[in-house]
Amino acid sequence: MSKLLEVTDLKTYFYTDDGVVKAVDGVSFSVDSGKTIGIVGESGCGKSVTAMSILRLIPDPPGKIVNGEIIFEGEDLTKVSDKRIREIRGNNISVIFQEPMTSLNPVFTVGYQIGEVLMLHQKLSEEEARERAIEMIRLVGIPNPERIVDEYPHQLSGGMRQRIMIAMALACQPRLLIADEPTTALDVTIQAQILEIMNDLKNKLNTSIMLITHDLGVVAEMADHVIVMYSGKVVEDAPIIELFKNPRHPYTIGLMGSIPSLVKEGQRLETIPGMVPNPLYLPKGCYFHPRCKYAVEECKHAQPELREIAPGHKVACIRAEEVTRQ
Ligand code: SF4
Ligand code: MG
Picture 1 (tube, rainbow, N blue to C red):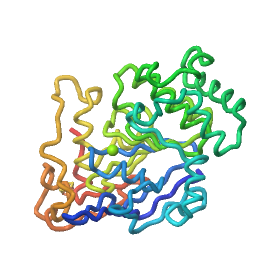
Picture 2 (picture 1 turned 180 degrees about the vertical axis):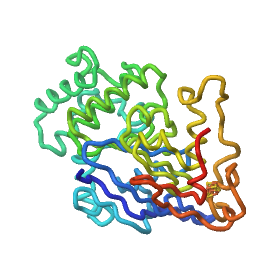
Picture 3 (picture 1 turned 135 degrees about the vertical axis):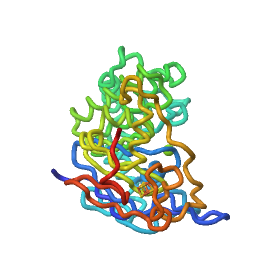
């Protein structure tokens, strides 16, 4: 399997007046060509900062990539010029965010916005860009693309706007699509449709997807591989089937306990007790220990290493072998 993206020991820190926030602290993972990786965790775990680091969109100051490599198709994105990273963002890596209303420009038609990037980066004429926009609108399953192409964002529903965002992101046929909570603001039915469209397009266009979400249920539908993050670190990393069959980090199991479809009949939906720690005052030892029902004395002192417990399955927990889903 060829690797499209390989992130190694990435550290992205924010230097605030109150201290250093290690938003991403030694994260490594890779994305295979044509596959979907899910990055999962509660808000503030560093998943969006990981994405912004790959796109080199970290506001500096206060943020900075202080360590690591981000190898995308043979180039280290932490080292390429500003001009080159802009080219890559226009042609090879696209992104969709949660809130389509803030990412779409209200004063331009959706057709213009889909086509703009193609005129800019792929030097298409206005006519050609419009044709491609219509084709993309059709591809994301919106009826009457010839009419929709001339409409403005406010004339469309939330679900349609999110499809337009996907059309925009995929118009240049990127190698990698980064989707940050792409369906969080949508209702469940539309969410399912959007995920299906993304999956479909991934297969048609052979795009890799990095799917960022707090929702393991969404990942179960979409991903080939999953990494679970907590307080800036990867705590579990496994192929999707292995992760759901054999989760080994207490935090992953906690996340699973809050997915209705994964909870057996008669069992209660469980939430993880306590809160994500303040990144300025992380606990000593395992960052998860104040919330962990498996914690022992050692967990309060030594930070667990991410170690391989089965082929391709890594866990950062000293008691991984004893941890199982009940
Ligand atoms: Fe829990 Fe200890 Fe494992 Fe951390 S290392 S997840 S505190 S058992
Ligand atoms: Mg986020």
